[in-house]
Amino acid sequence: MLAGVLAACASRPVEMYREPVTVHSAQLVPLDPDVSVVADADQPIVFTAGSFWLFHDAGWYRAASVRGPWTRDANPPWQVKKVDQPYALVHYDRDHDHAQAKAEIVPEKQKRKNQMFDF
Picture 1: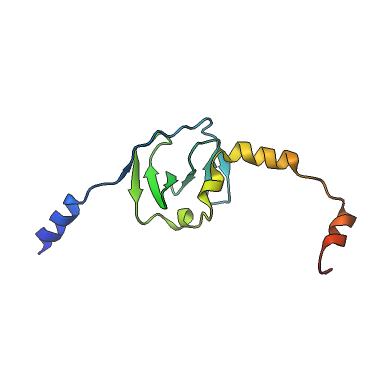
Picture 2: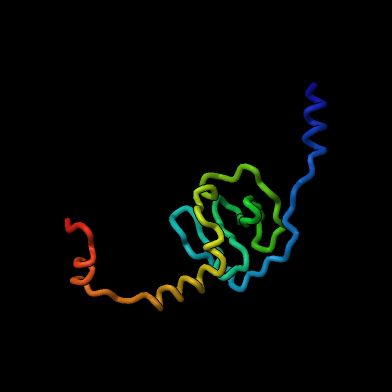
């Protein structure tokens, strides 16, 4: 019976991500203490738990390098699972800077006036 289980596992194909991944900057930008985003990548890529993780087609792919090869991991670690909106991380550094540059500075008095409740 054990031989049958091992044979079934061995015959299971390893799912790979074979599309080209373009990374303009391999700089890691901390998203939180556990997860960093690969800055300015064409795909959502994070670094955590000692590996790079690429999100594609509702699944996570793991690699030792930002260049791959990428192997699908059906059970990524909790640090990867907590990434809520992976596609928001594409070109993260560049988009983040644009958002900061366009942000309006709202005076403190106006902030308080716009609040529904004043605590």
